[in-house]
Structures are given as C-alpha cells and as structure tokens.
Length: 122
Image 1 (cartoon, rainbow, N blue to C red):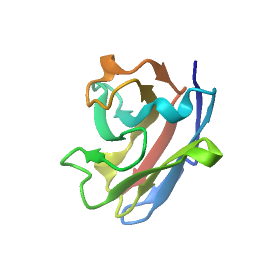
Image 2 (image 1 turned 135 degrees about the vertical axis):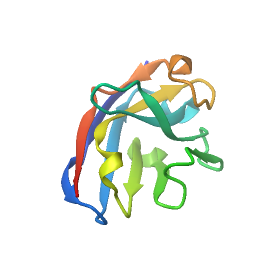
Image 3 (image 1 turned 180 degrees about the horizontal axis):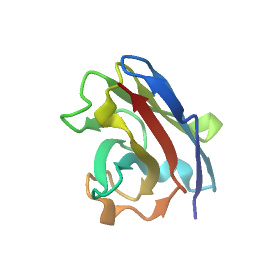
Image 4 (image 1 turned 90 degrees about the vertical axis):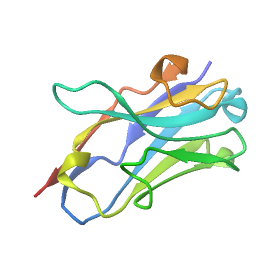
C-alpha cells in the first residue's frame, strides 16, 4: 500500500508561484502512476495533472497547461506540483493520488492524500 501526505499549500497573490509536495511511503511507490486533483468549494473534484510510474509521460488539464508542472523523485518518494502564474480560479483543496495506471478520472485512483488548501488572491 501507499500512504500520501501533501504539503506546501498556502496563500499567494495572483501571478505568484507555489510548489506542492506529496510525500509517499510504501515499497510499491515506484510502480504507481501519480496524479493531482483539486476541488473548489461547492464544485466537484477535477483532474489537474498526472504522470506515469517512470516520470517519462505527463498529462495536464487544459486549464493549467503551460503553468503547472508535475514531477517525481522516486529516490525521495516524493511527487511535486510546481504551480506558476497562479490565478484566483486555481483556489481549491489539492489532492495527490496514486494509481496502478495513469488516468484522469478520480475513481481510477487507489490511494489519496488528505488534501491541502491553496488560496490565490486577486
């Protein structure tokens, strides 16, 4: 099994940057594809970014392409989401998740972090 804990959220002004980290535990980490999702108040959870187990393939929602970058360091058991040029519409709770296969649907993921808040002021 895999345990995931997010960190690095907070408050930032529009146009600024944040880097979210997701610390993972479990010997199966290297075999998992990883994804980031977000959920704003009153809205459903939406896909943000994902990558395969090797880190060689990445996928992004159209709303974050060119601004967000997902990466992983398997030696450190950590997944990152670098967020640049942040907009107020990016305000949400962000979740990292692990899946046996790379996917953009939340129900394809087996393991989830507890979520972390990101607030972007206008």
